[in-house]
Structures are given as structure tokens and as C-alpha cells.
Length: 112
Image 1: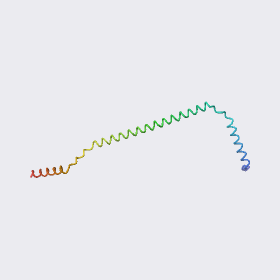
Image 2: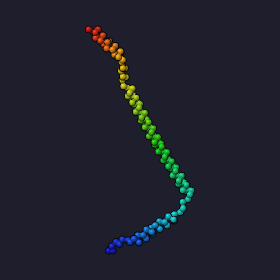
Image 3: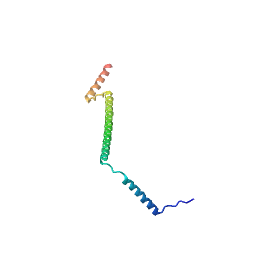
Image 4: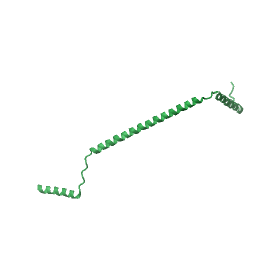
């Protein structure tokens, strides 16, 4: 059985040069691109990009509308909760407090 013989530097360079030449020949053999076809492809790519941008903008607008609706619902719920709370007792002035104390005192005296 023959053992593996590593290629020498010259063999590797020759193989690389040959591969490079094959790739170049293959590239040169391709037919030239028609300008009309190229323009059509570019127009299609631009249209596709614009459609994607419009779709993104629509999704963003939908998300924003949904967010505003949630915020409005939360505000309405908060307002409903606030409205259902009992009204706070009005703050009495010192004179009104004194009058109330005097009235309760007079009622107690009248009961005796």
C-alpha cells in the first residue's frame, strides 16, 4: 500500500493557479447582463423594499393604536375607580369645629 505523499510547494501553487484560471474562464464565459433586465431587477427590488417599509410602518401604526387604546382603557378604569370612591368629608374650619363641639355639649347637657 502506497503511503500519502504531501504535495510540494510548487504543486500547490500550480493547483491554485489552475483553479484561479478555471474560475476566470467560467466568469468570462457568462453572457453579459442585458441593461433592460438589470433595470427591471432593480425596479423590482426597490418595489419590494418599499412594500416592506410600508408593511413595517403599518405594523408600527397598529401597535401604536393598540397602545393608545390600552392607555385609554386604563385611564377610563382609573376614572371609574376614582368616581366610585366616596366623597371626602369636607374640611371644617376652626369656627365650624367649635360650633359642632358646642352643639354636642349642649345636647349632652339637655339630656341630663
